[in-house]
Length: 53
Image 1 (cartoon, rainbow, N blue to C red):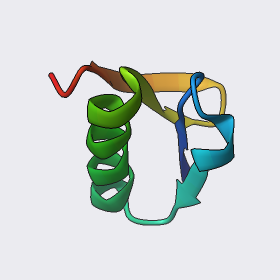
Image 2: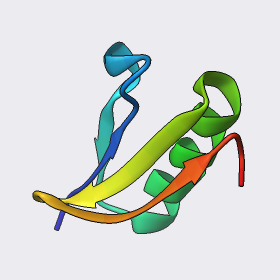
Image 3: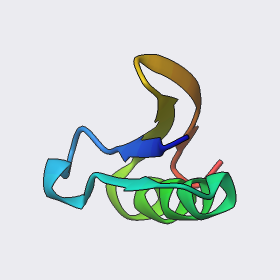
Image 4: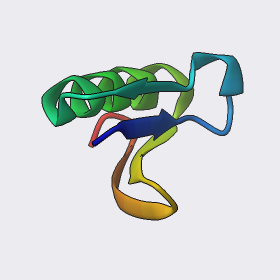
């Protein structure tokens, strides 16, 4: 299982992880820095952060 983190404002920061906790950690960091990021499993959006919230 691989989870991906997508950040529309900074696509060069997009990454994928085996551990979902790592994906959520990066997602939060990217949302604080760039405003929005989301965690996906395949094409399914599992959730997102906006401005660190």
